[in-house]
Image 1 (tube, rainbow, N blue to C red):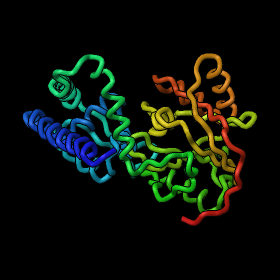
Image 2 (cartoon, rainbow, N blue to C red; image 1 turned 60 degrees about the vertical axis):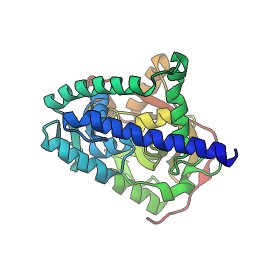
Image 3 (cartoon, rainbow, N blue to C red; image 1 turned 180 degrees about the vertical axis):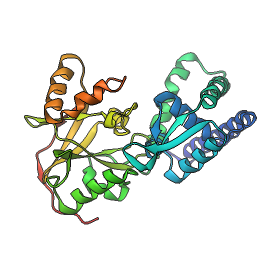
Image 4 (cartoon, helix red, strand yellow; image 1 turned 30 degrees about the vertical axis):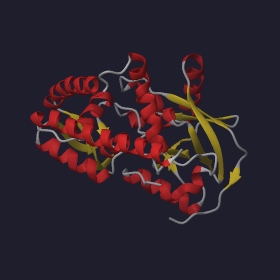
Length: 307
C-alpha cells in the first residue's frame, strides 16, 4: 500500500471516529448521559446483573473507567451496586427500573444514529459493515497477538489478574508452585484455564473444576449459581483457543459448546466430578452451558513461575 492510499484510509477512520462520537454525545446529552455510559447500560440490559470486573471485560474498558461510570449511574439511580455473594470485596451491578426505562430510550437513539451513519449505502453493504469494522478493530488492537506464534502462557505481559480475591489467590498459588495440585474448591481438584478476554484482549486465568475424560475436559459455566454466565463463557465462544494446566502439564485446546445428548453426557460427568453443579442448576433459571476442550498439542511440563 502506498502512502496516499494509507493516508486516505487512516484519515477517513479518524474523522469517522471523531464525528460519530460527537454525534453520539449530542444525542445522549438530553438523557443526562455521556458517551460510554450508554454502552454500560446496554450491556447490563443484554446480560443481566454482572460483577463489575466482568463488566469491565465485556466493555473492553479499564476497571477504573467502569468504576467511575458505575458511580455516576448509581448516583443517578439508573443502576444498583451491591456486594457479590461469592466475594464481598467485589460489586454486582444491575439495572434499576429507571435504568431499564432509560435503555429503551437509548435503543431508539441508537437506531436513529445507525440509520444516519449508513445513509446512502446499499443494504448489502450495511449488512457486511459489522464484520468489516470488527476486522479493522482486531487488526489494530495491540493487546492481541496471534496464538500461532507463541503460546498464551508465553504472553504473561498481557495478563490481567481477576478482580475476585479468591480467584486471584488460587491463580497466584498455581503460578507460584507450578502445579494445580495444591488448589481445590470444596475439596475437589481444579485445572487452570488461560484464555483471552473477547473484548479487552487481555490474558485471563481462571481455575475451573476438573472434569476430564480420555484427555478431554469440560468447562462448566455455572458461575457459582449466579443468574448470569461467567465472563469467560463469551470469551471462549469468540476465541476458542485456550490453554489448560492440569497438575504440572499444560496443553493447548480448542473449546466448543455442546448441546443435546453430548451435553447430557458431559453434564453427568461434570456432576460426578462436582455434585454441587446439580444444585446450581436447580437453583437458577438459565441453562448452565457446557464447553468441551479438545487438545491440539502434546503435553508440556511447566516449571514454577514466581508472581
